[in-house]
Length: 579
Image (cartoon, rainbow, N blue to C red; front, side):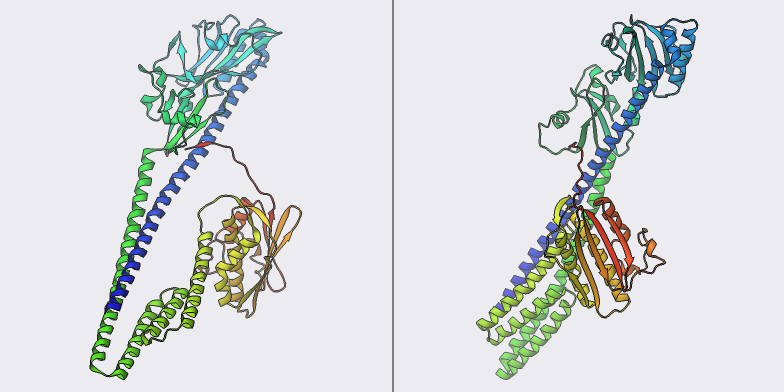
């Protein structure tokens, strides 16, 4: 009974350790799942910022074109030279310009003295000519552009000021200014005021994100909480939290839950856009994470409960059998005891075989070695040679299992980073993964992997393509019941390209569907024969990730696939502060 107790303890310890590893796997898998959602959200925010910057740049360009359209117009030229009826004609042209761009809040011509001469305002959608013109000679946007060349100038993105005071309620705007020179004489400025509030609302119309716009000093121009916008002009001015300023100056290596980027635009003040996941989206992500954790824990509990029940049945069976052996040993002679032991071993072998039948083949091999060792132990016939043979065979099985695990763990690694890698080793890894299926279907592979070919890109995606091609060839050979199936793989090196050729003897592709094989969801197989990715996805990977080309053609007794891959395929990306 002591030997059985020891087995119980060892088995129970292994069970506890295995359960702990499963629990840790579930925990870290859920953690990585949450991190993946977080990183994907930030990447999307980064893309949104680029889109908003491009939108704002195009808005500025539209304003520039409007100012140059006025400056180069003959009607305005006549107005500058005080020709008869030129005032009215120039004003009508100003009206037409402001009417053509709904983003314009105000369009003015200010003469060389700083006095408004022509002014049109858009008020609640209506274009109104302003009769009460103001003296703007003291405003910075006029003084800073006296005697300047005719080049577009931008003001700060700021609040509108009328009669020397900030307009209330706050009216955000920015100004696009064009100094006017006539025969090297300063004749004033053309100036457009843009509706800042509508522009900000358009920029930050992103339900999934909370947006903030700040200047270099940290004052808030726009905040998703409206009461925090234009913090410099509040009764008690304030700046944004220090962590955002640290992200601008790179003073901290801390990872943040937001993305911040400087707008590369010609405003006088530097502007930074901040995007972070909105509260509602954060709640959804937390709920999704919690659901995944709950499901994972439930699966873990079910697995542990089932495993515990199986172990309980095994231990009870072993205990019962050992009690029977002890009873027979006390009642019968040595021969009867030996027969009973043999009967016990047969029963145990049958039980273990039934359980092992549900496990993978390597585990079955290990089980048989363990049964053999236990049998020798009971007969006390263990020799050194037997132990050496046992260790060698067991290690071989474990090494094979380890190699299989390595192949699959490398293949399913979620890291998606471009890297340099060897083409021939990637093909060999794909062959290792599907080797058992090829062997079961009596398919031989001809492939010379002795020479190294280096390429740059996403390694696992290319392995995915290779697996799909090999499986397609295997399925074709199997469906045609070809006894001696064969797949030939060859790499040819050219000056700027590698050509990979996959040739099988599976009978080829019917001509009537050859031109459709790259269509999404197109297949001639049953669902249970799917490979996980279709030829459509293979082509997308080759075209988009490797900038290559994939073609199929029929040969004498099979299909030839040619993949052309550029040797150099590196794409740079603009740097961004990602927190």
